[in-house]
Image (cartoon, rainbow, N blue to C red; front, side, top):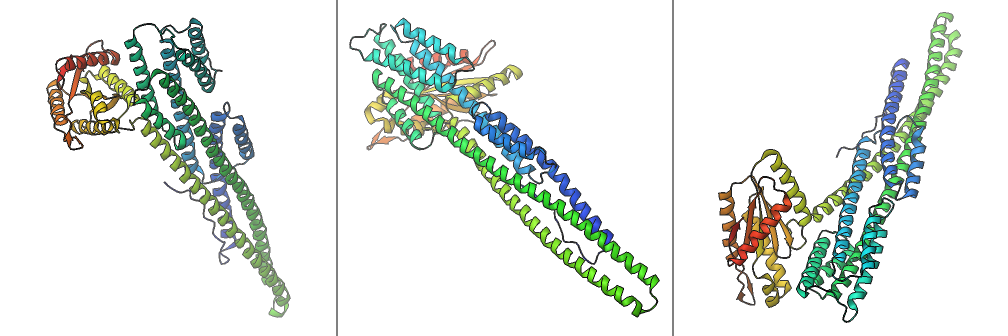
Amino acid sequence: MHSAKFPSIHPIDDKQPPERQLEHAQLAFRDLSLKCRRETTILKRLLSRLIASHSKENSSQAHILKEIKHRIDTQADVSSLIPQLAVAERAVIKYNNDCDMHKKALAEQISASAEQLKALFSLPPQLKRDVRQLEEQAKSTGYSHHRVITEMLKLYDRAVKLLSVPGHPLGGSEQQDLDRFHQLSTELQTLISGLDFEGETGEALLDIRKQLMLSPEPKALMELTLSAMQFILSGTKQERDASKVMLNRFSDELSDISSHTDIALEEAGTLIAQREVMQRELRSAADSINNGLDRFRTMDEARPELFRLTEKLEALSELNHQLNNREDRLINQLKNAERKLEELAKDTTEHRRRLGEQERKLLLDPLTKVYNRHALDGRLDHEYRNWLRYQTPLTTAMIDIDHFSKINESYGHTVGDKILQVVARTIHQCLQKTDFIARFGGEEFVLVIPDTDKNDIQETLQNLCKTVSRLPLKCNNERIKVTVSVGVSHFREKDNPEIVMERVSTALSTAKSYGRDQVIWL
């Protein structure tokens, strides 16, 4: 990162002609004025963006920023802030974009939770109507996400109480209910995997995720769901509070820099004015010397006038010395402002790095370290659009670890997690750099393979199955045999991602019904 450079201000050389000294001072003042005007424009633009970003959710912050903006509105020049303020501006814009992404994901999860609640058999009609009403209210701009979450928690609380009543008729087959609870558990695990809260909130959500992996009873599942939503709400609030602290500090730093710039500008104007006074005095002394040379014929006649001019020149020399000292102090003030800007730029760069790290974590499955389902949706949509445009081959495959539930039952979930990690790493190593792998849920993985013909894909997948089956996995000196089944399909005319995903899921089921440990195309 390039540091801002302030204009160099050099002491005026007493040996230079007076005209050169005046020219030097005028050029320095002109450069300082031009730089300060550019600086003011950039600073106003950044403050305007901050004000617009927080005008609705944080009126007090917006008011502070408006005050800062008002203070610099009348200034003509703010110098050398441009590189660092541009970095700060991009960091704030990036933060707002990330907040929008989180809000969108939260809205999608709220919608999914509402659908899951409505899917419960024999749910009282009034409760279903309340859920639908909440969905409609959530679509209105004046209904905040926090309020929607609070109301959704209340509805879930009512549903949990109904489920806890002995003999309550859920209706439908028991297996269908268990499948729905399993789906809810899987979706909640996926949601938690996509979050990246720090501290106690993050640890609590990871603990909930571990409990979900143990296939809890329906009542316990509902309680875990409520707890997860509460922790998500708490984590969102903590992140929002942290962002407020950061933006307040940025505002204070910018206000301090603006104040120092005002002082520096005023001091520069004073120095220029005093230099002009000194220049007039020097011209007067020079005129007196020239006139004296014509008027006085002997040294004795000229001596009194020379003494007077000498005293005047000594006074001007002292004034010049004082002005040089003040210029030195001004340079130190500008260097101090530069140091503060560098610190601010360093902080914004670090914040941008943390945001980038958070964004990366949001796309990774925390257990296997491959991409998660959210990342899969984005990549599949991207490759689908490329396929529509260029009609190059596009293939999707779904991989499932055979009899994984038995592995968990026989060896425990800790061993099961390690096997998931090893298998995910093995699959990734068998793929090309352009191929994409994501954990779809549980023990399932999805591959997106662009621009590769069928024969090469078949060879890769067959090799993948053989490699996994030969993994030297052991527990207590007992070898664990692990195999995978694969369902594959090309994108065809009139296909979309949903159709292809259904087809590869069917192909995977076919592979399992044919004896597992094989690749089936559909």
